[in-house]
Image (tube, rainbow, N blue to C red; front, side, top):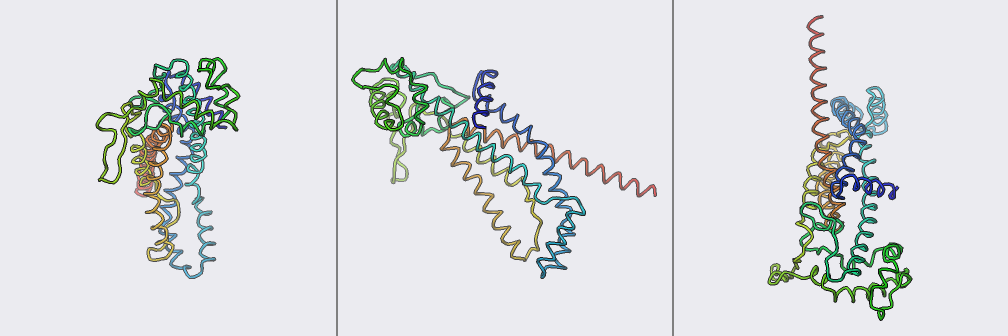
Amino acid sequence: MTAFFENILLWLNQLMGNYGWAVVLFTLLVRLVLMPFDYKSRVSMRKTAALQPKIAALQAKYGKDQEKLNRKMSELYKQEKVSPLSGCLPMLLSYPILILMFNAMRNMANEQMVRQVAQILQNPDTIPELTGWLWIKNLWMPDSPFCGVLPDMNMLRVVPAEIWQRVLTSDILSALPAELGLTVESFARENLNASLQTLFGYLASTNAYVQASAAVPGWGNLPVLGLTTITVFQHYNGLLLLPVLSALSQLIMTKLTPTSQPAAAPDSPQAQSAQSTGKFMTYFFPIFTLWICITSNGAFALYWFASNLIMMAQTFFINRYLDSKQKNAAEATSAEGKVI
């Protein structure tokens, strides 16, 4: 399935001429496919909310008999044709897609990083061609001013051996000094670390890699509260906008998305536990989003932010449509009452 997503992104890149806009278009297509489920979820949540007075009455009447209360609530849901779990369906569908997108972006980023290394090997005095998008210079590296435009050795260590073998052909490696002794076979998994050390020892001596990794004079070792220092690269890759925007949009989405679970009595342990869990999740998801987008490539952070932005727009228009539909139904009922 990951390969399927990669092929779609490759096709969209050919169509759009840029991977960044291809990711945005792909995100829009995914949200359009999921929109019918989002709509059903909103309808179910509204029906559940409308049942709260009846649910509260059942809790007051059968609160001491949990088994009977659960049975009566199940009967109520069945009678009103409401499923309290249907509101979770879009989330259950969204997260597998999110994981597949993360894997697809990681695979594509790994291959693109190795291809950039191959370009340096072919022309050591020139920074390789980068896949940029707006303020991001290399979409396959994190959107951060603390990250250079080229991958460091730690990033390249985790690239699977088969990608190295596929990209670094014998023609490319033959351009290296013979004393390095690097061949395609050198990048087999058992020899990968030693080969990378040799390769990066060579790359560190080339103008392109040194230039891309150079810190800004006078700002390279910026003190922070006298405790530590941070490095801002001269050729920094981004402005940290996508991780921050993703986290903020996730916070808004969390606040806009009501719970689909029935409300318990305000003073009950269930209500207090639900309230505590709700507060925790409200801030956990944005913090988790910030961390995962900072540590991932810019393409994945772009997908996360675009997905949240489109979901907010969908939520607005679906709620507006349902409000209008509910208002018209209420007016029609009132008119029928007057006629009678």
